[in-house]
Image 1 (cartoon, rainbow, N blue to C red):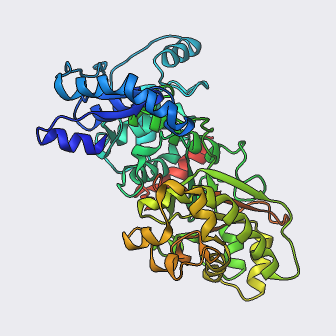
Image 2: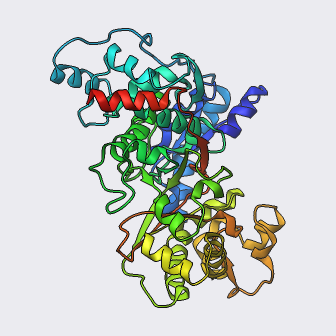
Image 3: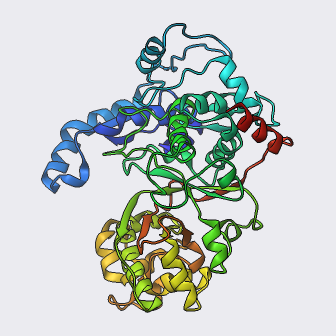
Length: 460
């Protein structure tokens, strides 16, 4: 669609061939990019699931006429219908149930009850930021809406957040709006969900869980802030199921993952935020994508290398099926979560966090022929190297059995310490290199942060 739009802007007619299941999304994407009448030719079904004979028949009987029409007939211009609602407009009055029904009917909720965002509740959130209510943080696709401090607060109320979470919510939206994150692809068929990772003293200030059940619902900060992100993508960015959100299966928003910085300090490592370019002790939020997960039960061993070997095997197994996305020219950045006792045992063997990343880079590998078989339509690894998409290590030889890494460099692994301190479990999140690329932002606390927290505690 993007290529067609650039060609259309030059005054050259185009016909974009789209599988039928993606036609509504194609129109929305085109409108988002500025052309609401981009002509498309709809192919019936999915091309990858049809035989050569079926493909030829559908091209001749279905596509040809549509392509001719697209190239010769100017389609009627369409513009999206949007309700003209101001930021402070009262849109509904009624009981809790009536407000929730009103929001649900307009697709402003995620199907769970929302907290009605009254003006008073929104103003309470705004007390926890020094930024102006209508300051624009960024512009989010596909609806090209402005992300503002005000609508961050509105959605924070709706998600069940507490007012003091406002600085974290704002940093999250700054990460979403960062071009590196590529939030515009968060409605792709893979159903990728974002993972929020917390660092800094704010973890304890706001009561994040970073021990047993670190990714389980039940703790307000972890749960409601996790819910906020997907609700915000829905209400402000405009990702709606059966429309702009085309996830095949999808998934539920992820609970926020807070690093156990006490455990990290005890074993002599630096927190993840330092790996991400910040000073130890800074409040930082990292937003990344987690497309697939693998839970490693009982990796315990008397040898660190045995534990790391299991981790490397899990990374290779989960990341190999996401590798085809790397043909776009970007390395994946998988997340590896170590429980504190596993991290401590590894550290006692002399491994730093950087050493763990290097081990995974060297050992999470698969034969080149396996990647090329799974990505047959993408060409060979050596071709990708010649095209500048992959670094040289992917074509050090043409031996099909040569082992190649899952990522470009050791620094592409994100290693986190969290979870039950007494359990020898680990978690691997496979990362889609093109969707939700990791972005870290400093959390800007208001100048009177400590006083606000004291007042909040006193009021409770």
